[in-house]
Length: 104
Image (cartoon, rainbow, N blue to C red; front, top):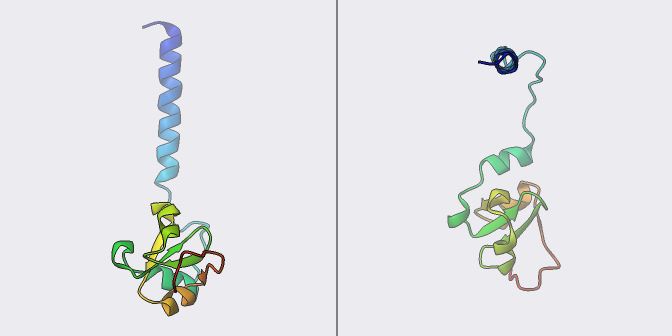
């Protein structure tokens, strides 16, 4: 094995060992424990999007009826489902007043 390959392998191994040592450090060091807000709790209690009558966008904090065309434009990773308008509003989401194809 050429010298440059051995040096590269040794440097890579040292970097890997260093990364693993940092990953195994206690998770509680330097972290703060906070109580979730009401909206965070409401989002955590949200239902599956496929069964939800209302779908919200985590990015825009707006919600729509599931039948609304705008729901199809929301990335699946940004969608959250709600059982009612009240649940969506409790989670900090608002109606999108400018979406004309949605019937609330």
